[in-house]
Length: 358
Image (tube, rainbow, N blue to C red):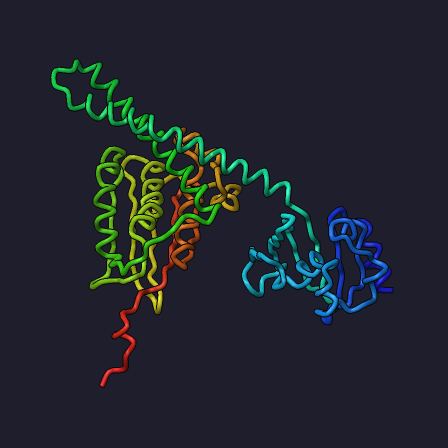
């Protein structure tokens, strides 16, 4: 009875569908699964798909999806214990990519699999194009920025000309920021966004970072505060990359604020973690925008009305950088009442601090 229901369910699903017991006995699979895995349902349904069967070259792709640890490349997309379990499984010679979602059911497990080889190739082509284009644009953009910088130093420029030069330099800087963000995002996707970690005192680090943000805050009429503990708070960090992430959050807190508002950065240590809270008194984020906030290129409607420039990459980069430091980031916001980002990073303990005292 249950097998009949599973077979009927499998037939109604467009993606590859496999149902199996805890001992890997296959209970049902649909036509799409036969097509993409090159196997026959008649030869597998009702049988235990053992590791012995998995060694058969004819079952290589099916085995890699059923036993992901056997796949040449496995990218886990969910935490251990999450429901459903999602992963990307990649094979070579020939190159094939699959997205697999596995869910526990009363009779065992069901796995829904979608081949994404073409999508992956298109994404790689797009990433390659962005990388090449950004590299080609960086040199002329740097030259333009350098030209405006030199013009600003010229004496005797009429006020109207000086104002035009300042506008041009600001536009050139924005262009360079966009190019840098595009290159950083491409490096993250390609796994080339390397880190140079070193012991870092977050107190001194944030003090320096916020000092650089003060002129921007003054320009927008926004006050910037740092609430810090006594003594050092040490983490293992890449100061340049971590600075990029936190500076972006502070910069957003300033630009999406109102004159007379504030951005308050609070640092504390709790157990084995350093906690950074970045709270602003700005416009807040719409509830409908919250689930997409860290997605690449996403900008909410309210955000675009407030600040027209932007790539939608800042929060995507910040999240990846924080996670690259084995940390986490989350956000709370109420429209009209401001936004708070919470960052957690593991504390760095000096080796001698772990030794028991005499």
